[in-house]
Amino acid sequence: MVETDSGYHNDLIIDQFTKQAIPFTHNAAHSAEYAIKRLVTLSNVSKKDTVLDVACGSGLVSCELAGVVHHVTGIDITPAMIEQANLLRQQKNLSVYP
Image (cartoon, rainbow, N blue to C red):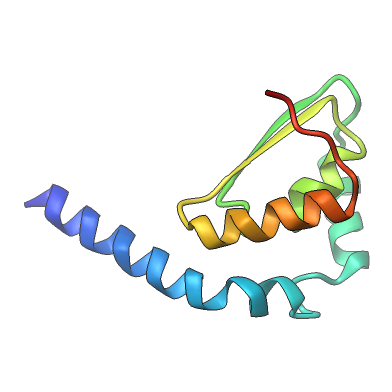
């Protein structure tokens, strides 16, 4: 029964965030450059760090961290969010490791 509930929950998350992927990415409240830069500064990361961004959404934080850390990996349950993250990665000309 737990698997069914978990699967249903995941399906709901994917459904809702698929609908919100593009608006979420372009929402000024989520993409406020100052706030994201401040978050990166407060995290105190450096070129020697490797970062895993769980529930990365559209990659706003992951892409900002990519300019500071050795390597960053963003994961998200919603394929549409990952698609937006990949578009942002391309726009920022960030490389991908195979």
